[in-house]
Amino acid sequence: MNEKERELLSLIEKEGRMKEESLAKMLDTPTDEVAAMLKSLEKRKVILGYSALIDWSKTDIAETVTAMIDVKVTPKRGVGFDEVAERIYRFKEVKALYLMSGTYDLSVSIEGRSMSDIAQFVSEKLSTLDSVISTTTHFQLKKYKHDGVIFGQDEEGDHRMVVSP
Amino acid sequence: MSIIKTEHQPRLSAAVNRIQPSGIRRFFDLASSMDNIISLGVGEPDFSTPWNIREASIHSLERGVTSYTANAGLLELRAAISKYLLERFGVDYHPESEVIVTVGASEGIDLALRAIVDPGDEVLIVEPCFVSYAPLVSLAGGIPVPVPTSIDKNFEIDENDLKERLTSKTKALMLSFPNNPTGAVMGKEGLAKVAEVVKDHNLVVLSDEIYAELTYDGDHTSFPSIEGMKERTILISGFSKSYAMTGWRIGYLTAPKPYAEAMLKIHQYAMMCASTMAQYAALEAMTNGREEMEEMIISYRQRRNYFVKSVKEIGLTCHSPGGAFYAFPSIAETGLSSEEFAEQLLLDQKVAVVPGHVFGAGGEGHIRCSYAASMEQLEEAIDRIGAFLKKLNESKG
Ligand SMILES: Cc1ncc(COP(=O)(O)O)c(C=O)c1O
Image 1: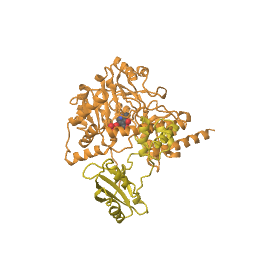
Image 2: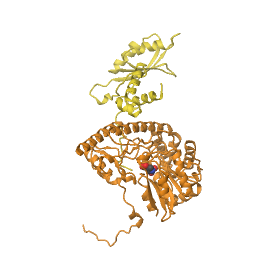
Image 3: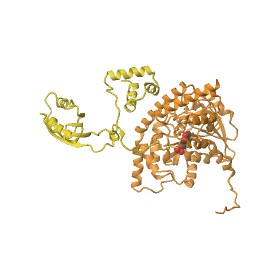
Image 4: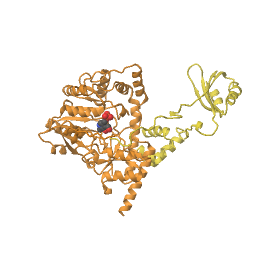
């Protein structure tokens, strides 16, 4: 990975929709070279996808419920946590999964249509896995900031005078 | 209600009558009266002050630290400034006797000029430049002598232009790189040539380096770091641009002790000290502000690249500005004056830029475009300026 690729990545991590021509100018690099870099980064699975960050609470689409579940498991000889992790992340309800240091092992972020949806998932799917020892479920009540972006009212507009020395 | 007639005619000083209100004012009034404009006319960062800096100031208020500080500023802050200047630019100032915390670089410029200018003294001012230099020289009783720079030489100083303007009355040289409005920077070699002239004629140098951190293609050379220059240089700087702290009104001066003592006398009577809560914010900026500042610098550099390339593509000549957050393209080929161009662009396309002539000699024929705006705004501004140029071309036939 070279300097240009690193700079490109940190740019599109924030500005995923920026036109290739603009990216190219910002990076002082020919447009076709930027296009090739993007292709290569996608191929190498450095860039895994492009998505929008949406505040669903501002739409008329029913909001989903998100829970973070702390899971304690028994690691298995030879495969450690990976095997049980895989069994968990394959469920489509699971939006994120991390191995954690500290008092529990896996942090599962899960999205459902309702609390009972999630309760059902925990009791039927998650707790019943052989290696799972215990689960603690925390429901998210409000999203203030996600992936570095402040949700809801951002009070910090542009307060500058239109013309100044 | 009866109109009271007074006998009193305003008795203003000749000094204040000599200076003109800034040419930016007229544009401000015009642009402010319009809705939905895209402004490239703003001379300040588009970031808010990083939260840790704001939080440090809030914390100082919570602790009730609301009294005056030492005239020269909190010693802790002066020590941090001294350490920073040494590590970053290799210039060494004693925190107790050679550093003064000021109310912005603006106050620093005023203090420096008042401390060195006698009535009739000539001060060479490298132009185009920040709007306050010449008026403040006049207010101090001096005579501003413009030294123009031009796009042919990337808006750097040609030492021959300096020499031509030297007289027996020349006392000081005022310069500022990276420059507002041109974005020009000057490297060590160019500055060394300037230093020769300065030494030969025993000038004092006022070096406004408020944009020092916003240098994109190489390292900034601080004027006092040039051989033999520290003893005769007053360095003016501040937090406004690099830490996005314009509204805090906080900056600093460094100079050899005799100069610092003189400036401190004025500061102590005129200002007492800089705002205490702003000083605590500045201290946080100096001690924990580097990382976020560097992110801002990268973002300015990317937008500089974008803007300068795009403005050339739509047909304007533009030198590559190595610092600050301004591009200074030439509009001379349109046949319009800077003022006409800026005004028509504003009325026709609702894009605000600042006409170059307000920044002094060498500014006519250019417009200052600040790229401290969001990428969406910059893209839109480029489209609109492009459309405006096309219209101008078509009407010329
Ligand atoms: C070259 C230059 N010097 C000084 C200043 C004033 O800075 P401060 O906010 O520290 O007074 C500015 C602000 O636009 C500037 O461009």
